[in-house]
Length: 129
Image (cartoon, rainbow, N blue to C red):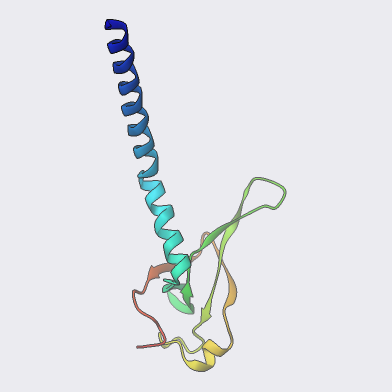
C-alpha cells in the first residue's frame, strides 16, 4: 500500500515538473517574440520604416518593412557586414507613400552594419497620412 502511494506521488511530482518545464518553454520571452513576429508577418502588420542617414542627412527612407535581416553566408556560417530588407522607397522623402511610389513595388535594399540608420514601427499605414 505504501509502495503504491509512493509511486503515485513520484508520478505526480514528475508530471508537475514536466508541466512546469513545458510551460516555461512554451511561454518563454523568446517564444512569445517568435509568436508575435509570426502573427505580424501573417496578418500584414508591416508598418516598419527604415531611414538611412549619411553625414547626418536623410538620404533614403523605406516603408512597410517587415524586418531587417542580418545577412549570412550561403556556405559558411558567418554573418556578413550588412543588413537587408524589402520596402517601398520614399523617393521624395516626404514621409508619405505616394501612389506612384507604391506602384513601383517593394525594393530590395541593404544597409551597412556601421551606417547610421533607424528602424522603427510607424504604427500607421504610410498610404494614409
